[in-house]
Amino acid sequence: MYAVGSAVLVLLLIAGLAFANSISVTRVTNNARSLHWTNATMGTSALARAGLVQAVTYFELQGSTAVDADDLAFAMDQVRSSVAELDHLFDLGEGQDSYAALAQYRAQVERAVSELEAGDVATAKSVVATDVESTYIDLSNSLSVEQDAIQAAIQENSEAGRALNGWVVFVLTLAVPGSAVAVYFVIARRQMKSVRERTRLEIEAERQISSAKDEFIAGLSHELRTPLTSIYGFAEILTDGGVQGAEATQETAQIIANEAAEMTRMVDDLLAASRIESTGVEIEVAPTPLQDVVEAAITPFERAGMEISREPTGVIAVTDAARLRHAIINLLSNAARHGGPTVGVEVVAGDEFVDIEVWDDGPGVPADQEERLFERFVHAGSQPLLTGSIGLGLAVASRLVSLMEGKLQYQRFSGRTYFTITIPIGDTSEQVDDSPASVAQVIRALSS
Image 1 (cartoon, rainbow, N blue to C red):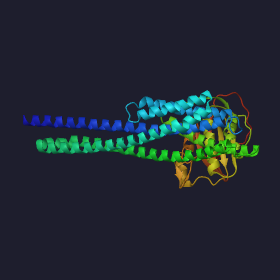
Image 2: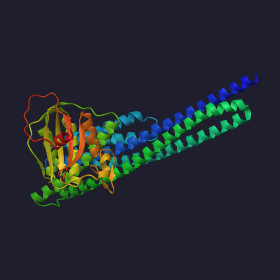
Image 3: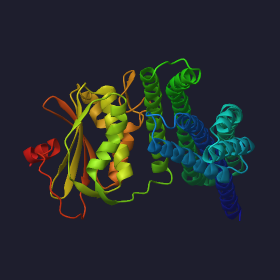
Image 4: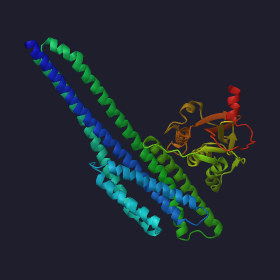
């Protein structure tokens, strides 16, 4: 009878321990989910704010040679995309401490977008500068407070779990004979160790994610502020009549357009990276003249004064033109920042695949960085290795090419740096292309 009672007591204690641990794990999971929501809201609200400023600037410059209709439409698409992300977070965030602050910020952002869509640029600019800015600050402060509270709750749950385990050990030691204690050490203690380790890893992972995102958002704010400062400054000069003459006006407008294009590339990469990691990116393929895609990608850089060599091509591929253009823009931006003075684009078709090469005569990538070249947030020393300081350009380009069933490769050949996009041609009508073999094809032939 005593043995049976001891066994029952052991089983009850083990069941109680498992139940208590399951509650602890559930609390940690809920805290982790809340922390993820606050981090996502922090980043998306910053993107929406930056996108609105860019869109307002484009509307003010509408009609100048620096901004065309495609630029304006693209800027508005990015703003609407940020608004959609805010709506999604709003739907998921009921019960969060920052939910009310998000609602106020979201309402002001949507108000500014409505004014822009109605053509009232002056009112939209006023809303962005006052209401959007003030609610953004309130939301950021609220999210920071909520993040601190969640971190404290995670720590408290962890300490409570350790205290519970200690108490159970004490009770078992006093109340159960040696045989039952042996059962505990063989079964229950193993379970507690497993749960504690899993909980510790979850907490540590969330802390690392939170820390990385905080640093990333801080860096992003700084990088976006740099082009925004130039845009605001030169726009004010134009508004106040501080520029005289058509040539000087054109030069000032071009500077504004260049800075806006740089900010657009950063925002595009952030949105693409976010969608790839969360909802995914839809690929819409159609027969696409690659000459049109290449020219569309090159045009913004040539407006900024960059010379890019290329040869006409008649290649047509079944692919996603928008995603391919995004990838080529990232490679050109990388060449402009870190490559040599001579930059070129070549398109060469094989039987089943086509190579799009973006090359420059710069020194290339350090050997110890080549394996990590397409990872996110990779930096070389004090200078960013990838497009922009936020370290997303080449990683986003590689992922977009992969989604198009292709591959992005880095190669050094005859004193040049090549980034080669290789994608399937697909089922297209007959096409003629007499361009020479690409570097990728030469290297493949030499390796075979």
